[in-house]
Picture 1 (cartoon, rainbow, N blue to C red):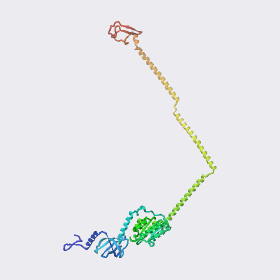
Picture 2 (picture 1 turned 180 degrees about the horizontal axis):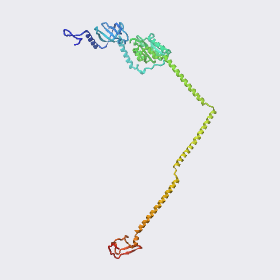
Picture 3 (picture 1 turned 90 degrees about the vertical axis):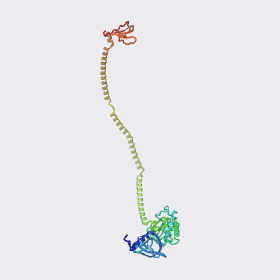
Length: 458
């Protein structure tokens, strides 16, 4: 059990009025979403806090409304007694008094919703045809020869545009093509003036066209939402600037124009170069031109001085050429002597290197003689040694010579058939021819008989 809920004597729950009203308010806000409600304004009051309090009614009923300051400050108009309006509101309850009311978030004049739907349909149609394409938009001229204005002669917007143009660009002529800007059939008249400005653009020397009017409700601006005007602007040979209403107002003409300005004054500023800035730029360019001309003159004077220095008499030119010829002759002589001098220096260097590397013949000859003497001495000593060795070997050979043995009384038996020496007694055969070698000769003998004898003594 909550403090707001108290039991009664019968046992049923009892709730305070504030709790009931709060519950009803919550139920209403959940059950009824934001809805558009139409009616006639009555009892309108604007409080010091900025809140609006009024009622809307029709023939059968009425409803109290409140529009708080945070929403009311963005409304396009302030309703008056008897106005037919439509409000976008949330159904709620003012709990302290238990009164049903509408919490208004937006307000518009009756019929504005239908006009806005027609605006959206036409915008979608023309956009699909390419009338709003960015590639067909043209840039505004930087320095227009003339400016055309299509608007009403009684419009405050015309005075604002003319004042701005006179202040910024008094040197640019302005041509006004008058046409009404509000009422039935106004769109066609505005389109005729746009076409007339294009037809006379060469005569009036126009380079840009402004289509403008002041602010107002959607009904007041509806002429600028008509298809005929949009097509005339899109077909215009002149770049068109649209300056209709305030910054928050958008029309079909804004989308068809080459440039949209938030206000008529802004449109005048877009098409007119500021005279002060033009004069400042002119001064800057004049100074730059003067500097460039001065630099050109300085270069020409310098070139003239250089040409004057080159312009000499024939005698002086011949003298210069003789001097130049002597210089060339000197350079030619120097160029011819230089190779000889270089060759001599190179020869001296080569000769010096040859002298350093040339062999000493006398020292070599002396060395050869010394070597020859040493070889002769060595050869003589070796010959003596060889001769002594030969003498010694001859003596030894003489001692061992078979001839000496034969001279001592020995004889050598040689087989006449085989030519071999016979050493053993059994090699002697009777009747066998032998050769006997003696110290003083040899003799052929034949053995008659052989009697072998084994004895070591002779």
